[in-house]
Length: 184
Length: 312
Image (cartoon, rainbow over all chains, first blue to last red; front, side, top):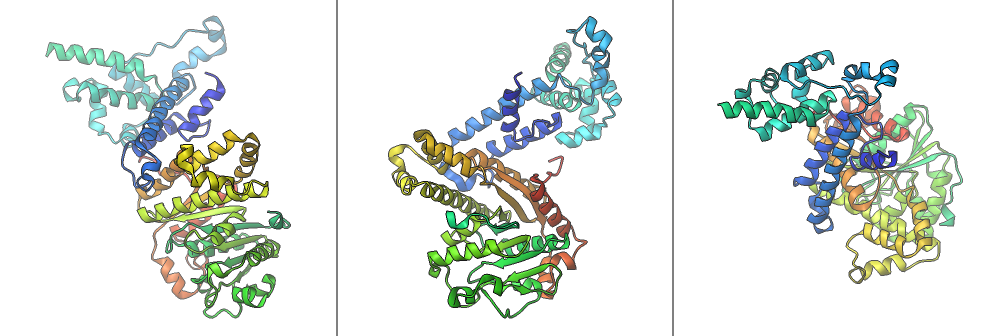
């Protein structure tokens, strides 16, 4: 992505251009809550800041979040060790375009997390989600997990926290979840 | 305006914010004391006309000299500087008796600003009155650092918006006047319905779009319009986050950049300290409040936002 364009998205989320994935996520949640809710900060403005304008701000926040997540997934993160092989000069020159194929099962996610030195309590605190739920997610104890629509959000948060691409993880994880549900 | 061109080395900071009782005087005295502790030569000016009490934060109960002499007897401002018992801090006490803010003439005001700029100090910190009177706004606008104090309450937030909006409008009008377009901003604002303008930002955008030379002037002059926000008397993380929300809304609604420079927690020690008549920053150095004032001032100097609590 063009650098200027990225800068614009960082500005939309009110972040400096060197903000981390975590900053991006925090800012996104904070702003979304502000402009979607009934904050006392907006109340005094009344019609000077109408619903239409709020909607536009919310759309911009969503767009910026998605664009920055996409841009960030190519950057070194806490899970950079996963890509080390691909990034080392010799290998990079022979197969420059090859993406690292990450496994997306619960246990493999746990391995990645442990290798990154992230404790479940950190994720739990960050997203206000119970540790037991995260454990069930890693152990793929589907019966203990919430409906797909909520599960998706937890998977996304988990992936984002570790600096992984959420799309693939959500996709493959949910496939297994749906298969289990059908059998049941 | 030509009369207020900079002719000195020191910096002027002004502390305002609209609502009364938010702690402007406490912040002024504490910021001043911290700067003095850092070795700066500081003069505090109490411009809270009618409600002056900055002197009591330094244990002075009946000031010998005050701004009254400036307004009524034409005394020079530098002769009204009173030493305090504390190193590097002097002050000009406010007018407790006679003068009403709207009695101050235009030429008195210009003279006052000129003399404030000539004060022999590395840092001048001005404590402003509550409200958004034009004299208050004009004093606010001469400052190098414009500080707005807020407490986490709806009315205070409303007043701060009003204060910032009025300051910005005043700045726009003054700027245009200096360049010879005296009435244009007010005229368009008074007839804003005809122009399809709903708020100040749209007025500024309209002016910029319609007259490219005005756009250049405003861009240049408004680049220096940067407000430092400090949230006083916070009690929890949600209160702290209000500052970030206000910053966001002011940018998206007015296009005004705000630096959320600091927050200060609620602490009864502040009231105790006033009763004891010693500067808070000297008496209660070890409190969270005092640390937060230091962080606030350092953030202002570095042009940084305060870090927000994590995990909200």
